Image (cartoon, rainbow, N blue to C red):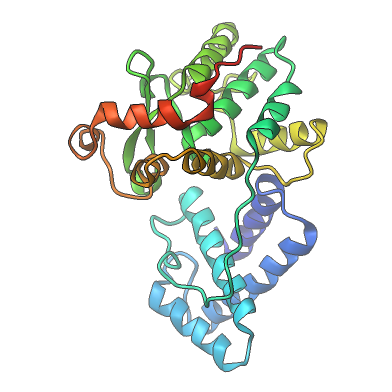
Length: 302
């Protein structure tokens, strides 16, 4: 695919999946244009550029007198862009991942309170297949701290309801086991009653969350409904699946969960299916989530 087409796909990703404002998108595009010029000048491409090339690019920006805050924005944009390329399988790695930003102060992520999450869920129409599916999706994102790609790729074979775990494949095709709350399992069960009546397309039989057309649900669909529900609930925040992931981690930390466990749950360290039994005690890991996650403190049925 031509670089211009990749850039346009990325623009749509920022608009439809990230829900960014037109002003923010234009800032990203402006920074990406600087990188595009550098790539063209050095006979590179977005597919083969490496970390040392990006460091040379940034050195040129520093020399030109660009402010540290602007440099930080460029680096953030590069990381986002190459994550997108990985997500859409243009690349297997992120050459910007290890590049450090200048110290300009920490920007805290958007986090929802438990009350706001309940408001978000409270506007969903559970009389429909679509609403029941979306409730299960939001509950799973929040209860497990999943990335959106991990959620949309969930399969029946990834569920271990009797053990109270799900298996996900994260960045770099690394697998991990994550405890899942009884609330989330109940909502998934409600969705499966509707799913059984949908004609599933060939090749999508094992996918947990599917559209009304019988295909695996898309990232864009999840973003769309989250935005719609946030507006209906009167939440004055930009809501995305990653906000639910941030909320998962924040709420556990606030309630005293072990930071090591949270890192494992978020997939920030290497872990395989077998390491779950040797590296961390399985019962301890599950108990940490049961004791500290608010969904396990109060089972709310609607």
